[in-house]
Image 1: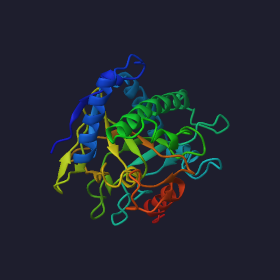
Image 2 (image 1 turned 90 degrees about the horizontal axis):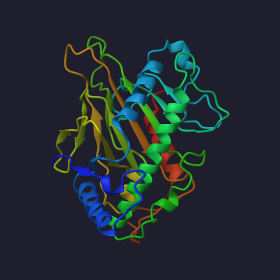
Image 3 (image 1 turned 30 degrees about the horizontal axis):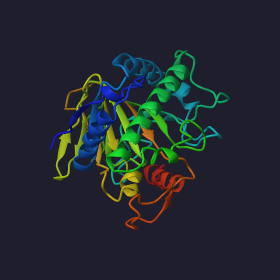
Image 4 (image 1 turned 180 degrees about the vertical axis):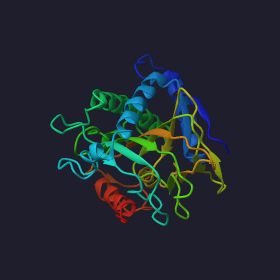
Length: 311
């Protein structure tokens, strides 16, 4: 089954003229996508391609800086937030059974005004990242509201555990990702640009550059392509949401392949990883005990440990 494309215009950002019937139809469409595939493309969300391109441009400027300049902003060097900052190539193994991923990233995990940000050569880096973070936050809350309605729950059922997105008591992260050119002679056995994995939290918003490589494992156990579709956002269910909904919403495994032999191009993406508040206890919303309750921050840290265990 292919990943569906759904028109989100009836609930796009800034739209306050809402119809109950339209929202019901949209929530049913989302439920179908998230139960059958785990991924969906949304078009007409209110986030424009120009906004996405602006973040891509400033992010690439940062990634093209000398490593000595980027190292100053390394993940783990910010006392207020251990996940904020730059991640170098091969530092992560999202599939721990593979060598380190051939990508680098910058995590905007804290919006505090008292932390340092890259500025030399990328003057507007902080403002662009923070502005896009907040846009993604608003879209995410709308999606979470519809997801609750699609399950017959109160519209605020999931939102109550996402009250602090953007603060240091919530792990939600905007991640700018850069996949540098691949030298096939230096690639280790079984190495990928990004190893097979499922995401950790509630949902993830993904914006991609035109270069391909992203694949999603469907319910039939086959990998299907998830190409960039301009003007859309690709949204997927993450693991805590699958637990939360007792496997109604499906968290799909995905990966990014190496480019074809001889392709020396780069690839970029932006991923907004929505995480429940740190102290939120995630238990099955249908009242079952299919999964034991888990604290959001404990689950997140356990997954980080797996991804960074080789370093």
